[in-house]
Length: 608
Image 1 (cartoon, rainbow, N blue to C red):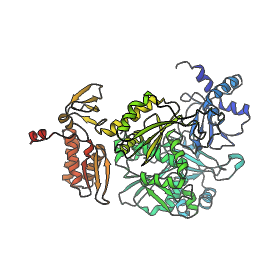
Image 2: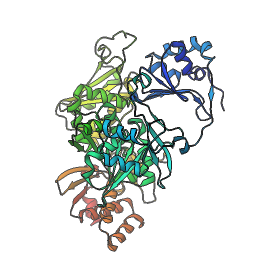
Image 3: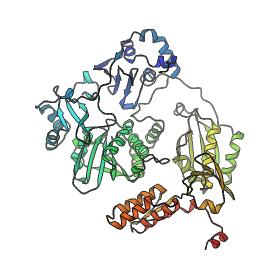
Image 4: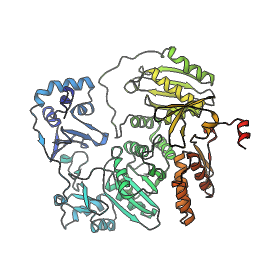
């Protein structure tokens, strides 16, 4: 093992010793410490081979780490201030007791129940509002049990129904001992990573639906309210929101890909960001690490806006709910949160903050810089491009505005002025998640590109320029696939277009030869609602396979075999997939004309 640097040594000092020295009150739960003033902040004092220093996790704000991270997040210190504090306290912190333990696998015998379930049943029925028959069924099937101290245990079961972990939920209110929450709440020691409490409720209709919640109580509350929705329904708890998305992937890997994934987290900021993060991770826009997940239909399920979670809705006996696609969900949340809170949540999401973040009071007052950024020579090239398309750009220094001084260095304002390229350029900037841009706000008249402090203007201008080039010439950035399997990206177009291949070799192509290899985007018109939507090549392949799978006959099985296994060019394979979909009478697919190379007339004549 490499020797620790001085910085690492300082950052990895004892959190518990710091709490003791500073007199910060906490409750001890074995090797865990729960802070009294923030009961969702837990310190893990164990030292193991895999975790060689004390750590903390603040569940409500989705942050954690070592003592340095603790000072920055809990004590609200700036980086330099935190390091100065670590150096000053090092002699005292060095006296900390080390809790060195061996990592042990989960042992179900340490979480035994007893035959008397009265306290747990009373808690689930009287305090949580669950149906007594549902509660009886949970105990009967071994999904829950009452521990000897009266707490409730939610059992985690794998495919073979073997217990691999569990959630502990206290049934007695004790705010003095357990803080604001009032009850004990923890994951059983040694529980399998990336797993959770789950159960099934199937009616044999064949439509596989997976519902995802933040807690076991929420999952049971939803089922209590909406069991009549039907389908082969599975329910899983993440024990959190945005930071536990790997649990969904692990569950799907073990139990199979559902037809519908219903994200049903809490009706608050953390739940909103958690559901956006799940969508981004499971069906990313710019990569496809899990192509099998593309066929899932992802829906966002929420109770009525006045309820924080599904248990609140159950206790009010409210069956009102929404089940929305990503676009409708975002519009709904813009209205329910209000535009200002919505923008703040999006900023937190982009910044990687997934909990219910409490705004921090700044300990420093930055000197405001005044005025508008000067239009230096670095602006010239992109300014000329935008002016040629009737757009114009200016840079505005935002640090004069204290509301944004902590988050952004500056922004670029672009006036649309009726430019035809504006919306396409904006899509490139907004959807490609360019690293320098923290946020994009826009309307038909123009947009503002908000930029992080750490990014220099010239780097951002290059990104704006690149987005404009791609908007002006849709072939730039398109992927091509050669018959021999080589793939690459179009980096320049013209009489001789350049393609940069994955092996970093660059090759020139004429318009005619390039047309044979470009992988197009597609336009899909669903005949049921007659709406036109965009789709990728991967989407078209999944649609075609789905069409064939749903026909359940030998001819369709043979067509699928040809589509998936028969040697052919990528363009031929996509053409075959288009034919399958277009003959299905439920959708019409055609290549997006913007991604195709216009062929000269004499070339077409020779082809005939």
